[in-house]
Image (cartoon, rainbow, N blue to C red; front, top):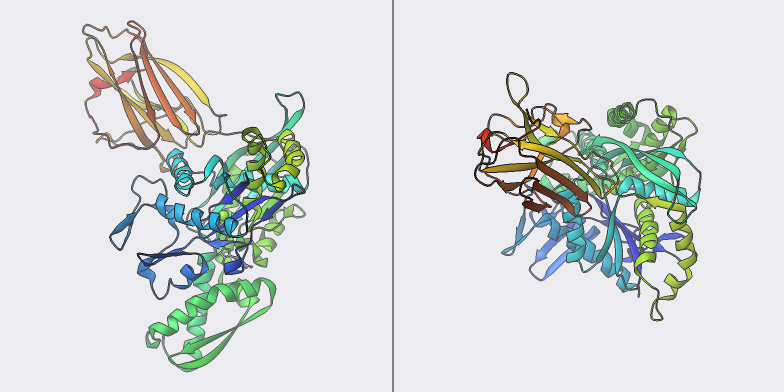
Length: 542
Ligand code: ADP
Ligand code: MG
């Protein structure tokens, strides 16, 4: 039985395990001659589905049969689907194809793969998390757990150079997303007596659609105009093949510029060969605004943890190979920047975590591979050194009515907050709005706010809404609580929310009768919004 960590990325994915000495190693994708696998799927025909670089190479020529950036849609209630040859795929199913390909890569090298940990962005809500887990299961993997990407990166960094009590800023610039996370590592007493390093995400920020792709676009534009200048043409004169040729060569040119001062790109312009030379200096000038945008997000995220001193900045994500990134971050955090295998660090951290968890689930038996036996000690050492705490990815609570004051207000009471240790559980008591109320519709919301309450949380139509869109309020579902005839409005209804990695459990108890109602909410259901206020619960008894 072998345990792996998987970074299921927006543009590239990566799989890693611990080697015999307990050090994380990435399983190479020999077919693409790379440490990573392009998260791109090409549906060539009903019998041939290709994942990886070959699929990516087909974006220009067969774009309508290629799926990329699927991670942007996974677990979204309004997620799109993809239909090829009369078969429809959800983003979860497409993700499962990418995971299956990673599994094949491992198996083609003679190992088996059973238990895995998959990484997710720290900002993923419950639906995105459960869809990711489901993708793993569809690929035939036993998903031990998920881990936040910045936490995995921090784990991989700390496993190589252990230092107590650190605050780490993770700057993760990938192919299509930019994530900033501030993470605290602190020594806390563990269950078995010793101390463990607890890893907690303090704040997250960034931009969902900013990444290496934007650098590619700028470079592509530059080359296109240079081709025109060379040949005395205007952009409209360029044929489709020339444009394709440019697009297919920019990413490679960009990668070259991370190592060299100059890159030569040969393009067939309307049939004749043209050579364009791009210097790193040109490239840095044309993309300086993008670097500036990332640094603004860094400042904004720092503001969320007002006054916290950053000890280390970790550069993660393939795009941080560009020297301009390291230079900009180094200028802001002199002497604090660390970069180790930025495109693999997340998968490696997941492998470490998977091994720590694997210790608890697999009682290594005779048929197990040698690799796992040998790393046993190391795994035990890691498990006693680190504790990755599952934290609530969002705040949760019911929508209730505050009848105090002249006008009643609909309030979202956040009684479980972002970042609490899971399982998180909280109970509060509410009351029916009026005497003889027949039922209560108890609505459960998910949001990003740290406030105790958000007012108002629904608009005139009864749709979820926050005072600030950043709260990202989402209605998860509702629990219908039927009340017996003649229930007075002073009746106490005890409401409990319990959040764990699999979803939200909502329970309501009519304390007068002992009647109990409960539901488990994992994904947002379609709910008929009931605008009548009578079916609500209110906060105070008077
Ligand atoms: P993901 O976005 O899926 O998390 P990665 O962290 O692997 O993926 O980042 C992929 C991005 O990194 C792509 O835009 C790719 O072009 C870019 N990249 C990878 N290697 C280099 C390099 N040497 N120089 C510049 N960019 C690179
Ligand atoms: Mg990534």
